[in-house]
Length: 222
Image (cartoon, rainbow, N blue to C red; front, side, top):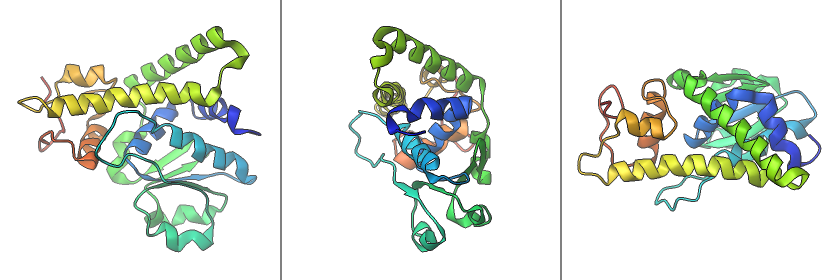
């Protein structure tokens, strides 16, 4: 990757369907550390692209931004220990053994999560469908705009629309009398009512949306 203008396509090609695992973890404000050998530029662009996955335009009363730290090394360990969320990268393998400093460790295409995130680190059928929609979206944009298409704006728009639909669905559910998310409502958000249950549960808890949490799920499946 030689320039940010083309980095997202390479980010997409590199991670493939796993991009939607990273997307969920970004929305959950987890401490995400990318590792790869030098040169560091490639890893820094992965941080940059991961931050774009959290884009949205819904006015919210709670914090939704990312915290990109970009390159980190052993001298940054004290700072990392104080961060409750970040997206960073390193070329130092020693960080893998310091699991108290991160929630998610990405070693090239291998995504390792803390146990409480284990169900999120696997791709489900909805992730595959979403990835195919992203590829179709990219093809349509390239057909429409050709080589003049702005790589960053194109992908940011896709993820902003995706995130907007999820945040708006949560806001709408919280404004109803029963404050419940049906299985159909979850599917309309592009999520799996069962396999994305942990993700939704943590998302609702993180953002403090007024939807009652059931003991075993975050939503009422009907």
